[in-house]
Image (cartoon, rainbow, N blue to C red; front, side):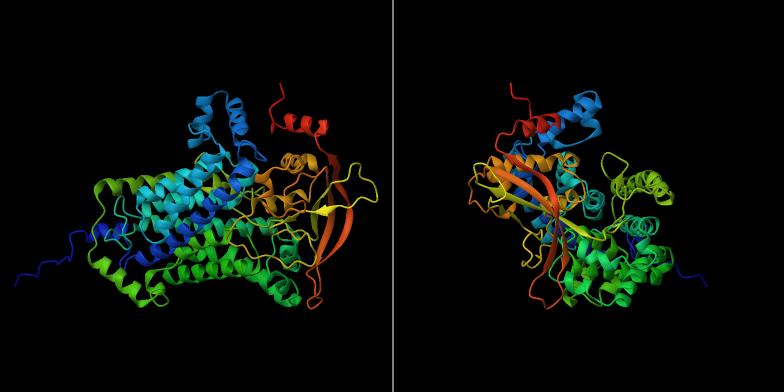
Length: 523
């Protein structure tokens, strides 16, 4: 009797094992959720460019991008060298207000289509190029770990979808290689955040950091006071959970399906708690993308709508194997990420670990960290203006209100997550330094004195209704959450003057801005 021939249900079975995980739906549900989260972040990122870009990096912005490009040419030793070292479409498109707004709207529209599920490799590739281009000229406004993370995850998304087919849940399977690269991103993201804490502030080891964090984070939101006033044992348990999520759980990714599930669920839980307790821009929303990639379709099928699960199963039944060109490209991407991971891994192992850094010009494989140190107090800058001819001790000063900064002690914290208020965020950093450390802040004062409508558009309230004040000054306070039930949100203590008073057309301000490279010399 002859043995029965070996049956293979599909000719692409071996290929499927290598590039798409077996199961009822492959990785389609994982990819579906990850790409929707990523598209949401892209919408928010490009919307912030539309609204804030001209005032921040436009020709008359606080840190003009055109002057920055000129500095990059001098730094690199020539335009060709600068283009190679800092790739951006703005080498060929002048970063005018119109160009920044136009790029922002293109990004919003493409990301909105991707959010609806209509995106292919071309769509995600354009989004990645546009964001990288803005990142290269964004200067201090874009020097955050989540901007590099968006570049890294956005690049991987290009290879997670079909090259041309834009349909949701297309027959083309999400490659297993890309899912594992997203998990590798999650490993470095979480472990980097955990190690920087253990190597940084001792409050992370004596379990007291959360006694201060919710009050002193850049932009608290309405729930932050309630987290802040939790009993210390609860807050200490929160620190322990953070250590488990960031230092222990990442290694579960290498311990089989159960280990990956525990790690993924833990990562997701941590990000949700952070979203619920503060306005940390889109850091945690974006961190959910590699976190969800640590899960699997069988687990997600238990919580996602049955209609979506059945659609994914139907797409799996129509699956087509990736072509030879695409398979080769995926192997090359894997090799490139492995090579570019050498320096980030070395940074993780170093006692002098950098908190957030990129080691390649395209921000493809980066090192991450968060809250390596936690402030014990909350210094805040209050910007005030006056119409007086010559200010004295009797002068009435009116405060400018920022969107989320706690200027008015009676005002409740705002809720803006995942939107990124870049000016509010850097005002938090500036309060812990001196004016010369943040030239853009001196430029802010100058722009308020000239009545810049773009800069006023970044504020929640202009006390002069569009008129330019004669004088600006900045005072420094320390803010603390007022006791719950007191009827106010903040208590504050005056520390002293930070800058000014500064009058219109002050020659020292003009000279400072020219020296800082934020204004061309007046011929």
